[in-house]
Length: 422
Figure 1: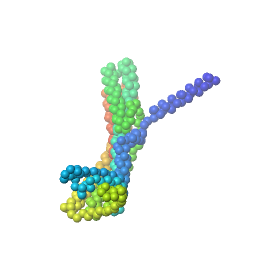
Figure 2: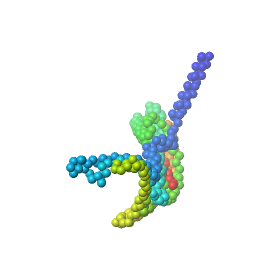
Figure 3: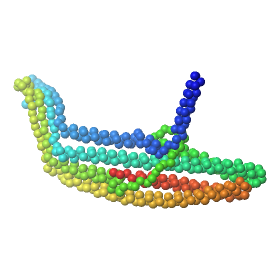
Figure 4: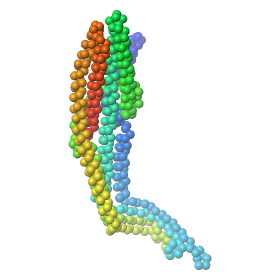
């Protein structure tokens, strides 16, 4: 019975270990890194907090126009000496002493339209913060994707060169035997062996480059990890970008225009008549006559009507008009840049795609030539120089194809950056 339990436990441990190793060896994809980069990003958290702060500011602003209640108390005493002539404040002014304990209520009245105009500024600022957050997410996605593509390109180059190194090492072992039989000269073998060692150095350099770019990717995502990892091929397709007027990049200019329009309306508010009322109740006495009867209340109102400010109102409107013209100029220039950028990127994508297709055809011929020379090498009918030339040609064509494939992904990433809609 104990033996059966021991075997069952051993099988369970083996299964768990197998599952763990499979999880460790599973390639990490682009979405994994994007999720980690967006999760807990301090910039995005800051923008979320700004929205909360703007909401709190709007509540504080509303509170300033509600009735304000306060309690006040005061006691003064201004003695007059009993010496000849008497020294001290004039009793008619100081009343010798006063005591007051009052509860005061006051409120500044404002038109509902004026209040909504002032609160609209906070609403526009919130929209601007939200749009900034969307642009920040777009920037993070573009930067992380670009770094992922770079690291993935290193991994592809490393895998290809490792495979080629393994083939060269196999060929070196066969060539060594044939050199021992006198089929090839010793110098031919040494030349080939030098090529193998050079390829091994290339593989080592690519491994270091891949580790560095993978570390850079993790750094951009805030991941603390230095272990080796395989990267899955990024699935990127060019997404159609909206017209500039409908894009998220034009949204900021629209919000800036609304904010300037709101400021223009705010200029007029202080020039409208303002009304405020106040009331208080309590005890207020000078201790002169029947002080214990001085409980009471009072009410009052104030009206303020601006008449002339030296032309400040017109100057403020003029300043805002200049700001609108500036914002329109920036918007129009950004629209031209937006359209030109997309045209340029699609042209680059077409050019790189054609070059990539051409290099793929070249790979077929280069690989066929390399395979033909390899067969001749094993029969002793190939020249080492010709075989090495075929290897170099194959390396050049394959590396160019990999570079075009990575360049194509990078261009698609740039195109997708501009597909943000409002």
